[in-house]
Image: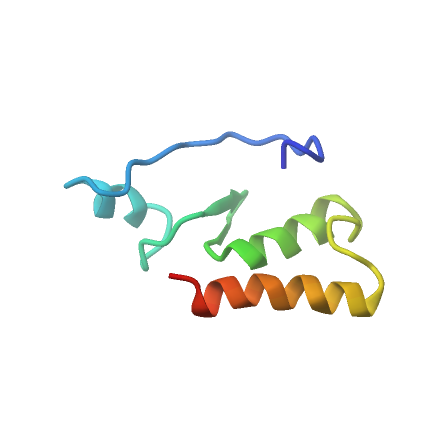
Length: 85
């Protein structure tokens, strides 16, 4: 968001504390980070956040346009979600 000069208010949370569940519960019921709040919309998946920001604020320019390059970038991102420890 900073790279593309999309205004944001960043809030850092400390994950391994006694109060983290209460802090995250106000944003989403599954206690996930990162979380994007945009007006009344709450998104808690990093890949979906990227896709939303690209479409909403960058006219789709935040992700590669050529279908093959776009597919590779999504494959890399999804691999991180599904198999990274």
